[in-house]
Image 1: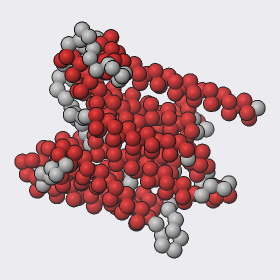
Image 2: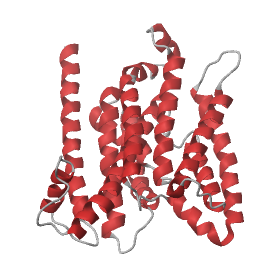
Image 3: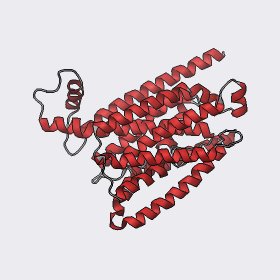
Image 4: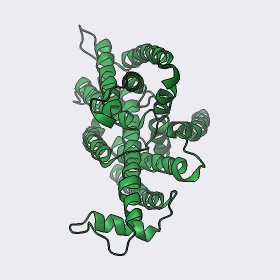
Length: 352
């Protein structure tokens, strides 16, 4: 009976992942065809087929303007938004599993505040020693520095252990300090404060293939690591003592997953800016369909997060009259959805 139940959930999870994969592919094609210049789905498919195959650099009969718009302008932005959505969702699953807190998300430990502080410094002092990637580099450095500070504050010297409570408290402390620093930098920016504010709201404008490759490498490798330890993460949800009794090195697994999820968050934030609610909503939403098994939840959340952020970016890029920062749009969409999920979960627990 137990084997049949496990087999059922595995089949259900595989079906959900296949459906999400199909949904992501459809969303990708539709998004690539939408914009100021309308492009047919067939032209999008032709570019994808011939551009990425050997000897397909030249497509007969296609306008070079359309080819440039699809390949050089839209595809990098679309793919980057999907990868960032997947990365934030994976990080959300990991943080909620490690911290045992349903309100945890990729920004709980102050990673976003660190990235915002680093980016604000680069913008304020006009640092351009690596060209257009200076802001992203400083954002990444700020996020990594914040992670180091949080871990340093959380580790007890006598026990060399990490607990959920100390991690959350350390994240709150560091985030509060950095938020004050960001406010001070905004004050110093004076008339240039709008540039900092726009970055903080999040955007995928002017993304390139370099951004695609960078985020893909980090998110893909990090996702594989998280999936490898998904079974251990399931056991950690039972508590530290139970995990140790079952042979799981709780502290080591927690540190590996914490660093991996934080690095994923850092690279995503450094490329896109601050985008909230994706890593918070998607894991909660997917648990209604896949259950709490992280071996299924992690890949399912990755695809669902990619779809959500891809659709949101398409709306702000091609549907609205003027481009709205995507962080604002995800907050407007995610807030009501999270309220609905919270209400349903509360009613379900009350009935039990």
